Amino acid sequence: MRQFATMFRQIAQHKWAWPFLEPVDVKGLGLHDYYKVIEKPMDLGTIKKKMESSEYSNVREIYADVRLVFKNAMRYNEEKEDVYVMAESLLEKFEEKWLLIMPKLVEEEKKQVDEEAEKHANKQLTMEAAQAEMARDLSNELYEIDLQLEKLRESVVQRCRKLSTQEKKGLSAALGRLSPEDLSKALKMVSESNPSFPAGAPEVELDIDVQTDVTLWRLKVFVQEALKTANKSSGGTNAQNNNNTGTGEINKNNAKRRREISDAINKASIKRAKKA
Image 1: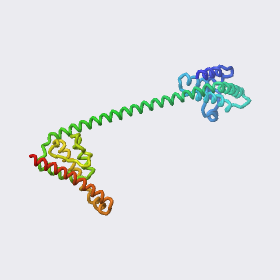
Image 2: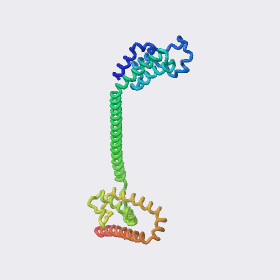
Image 3: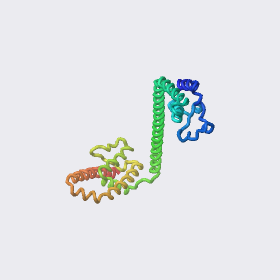
Image 4: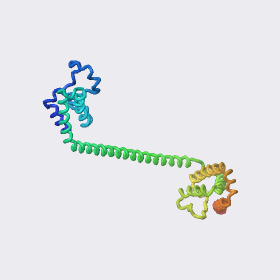
């Protein structure tokens, strides 16, 4: 930009530059057709003012306006006229000087592009980091909410009444009707309050009477929901399973697993009764 300013000053101070320093006095010179021929009037004085007020975005915009000054003069005037000759000569000098600063200009433009790209990349990284932090904060908040909900649920369950003997028997029977998948979930609930309970063992013995009230209520609610869901979808599923030999074998294994769990629960209940 500094080199261009020097070049512009040299052109503006040339002895032939005086006709181009101010806007064309169209009215004073009686140039009635000037605006019909010239679409965009321009002069060196106007360019200087725009440069001083930083109205140009880059050097190439100034370059285009300087060329426009001389091109307008050459378009409106005849080749034999002095103004045409002066404009042509100054334009040639201007173009020569422009070629001299082009390598430096291209280098500066490339540097500016790189700086803008780096600035954009840093802005993008900052934005992504902020989004990641927001996501992390949200995840932590959700985790805290889950903990609070779990504590609230435990508090509600602890305030519930104890299950009666009849309700415990009903729960034992209901556990035996669960699907293997739901049964595994139920056993996992037991192991959560009793880590020593072998929920994943091939054979387990579940003693309903030794479970905490919280565990029993969790099992009761879970079993009710699981059986309700199973009953809703049992119609179509049973019809399909009856027509599929492979599925029938799976159902037999599932039924066997449920019987084993149910027998283990009943045995545990019988043992408790004998001890009593």
